[in-house]
Length: 260
Image (cartoon, rainbow, N blue to C red; front, side):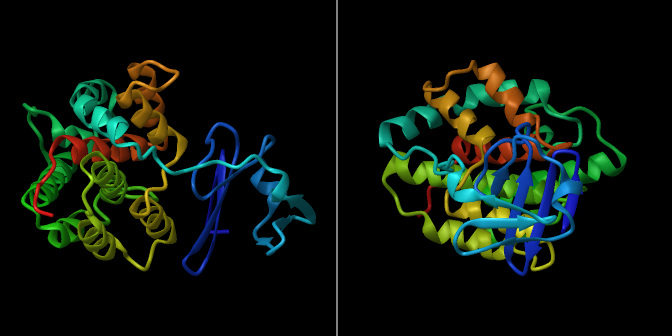
């Protein structure tokens, strides 16, 4: 077991990661959702066999019977274009709800006085964002990776959202932005945090959890929830992780650097 929380237990084996979660966390590209989640019941280690049977804590679960989640964001050009057109409206909603130490605060058009740790964090965030806008992707990823606190630091979560946003831009404009994605992904990998490295890999490939997928759908006008609810759900993940990922996603869609 790599880490355990009230509604999730993460298991890492080298570069591989499995997140066992409860229904509150919901589906994601690395998540195995249990209706009655209990980290203590699963135990310190799990084994997922090639036949899809998960062995944990003396119990066996046939994952082949589980409902499958498609983590890919919609790729239709008109849908992606509509999401990009509406992304700016969602930034204002995000700023109303985002936690104080979230990277979303670095996107404030008129930030207030900043000092101490929060001030240093916001300055680092803005420097990384400025590098992204200038097309200095390697330097930006190096600047942002590992920045912040928590199991998945704000900078890494922001870069995950940014990579997901770049995938949307590819479909919206019919462009190949693989160089940009691979440069950021390669520079952001730490080799020390299997969680962030696995999440970055998923984001680079366009794999999103349900919260960002719902946020995208709200931007595109295809969601079953209101824009406000989509933003609130995106934020409701970790202390700042959800807001940081949403900030990176919106940043990519609203401040595109046309160099590819």
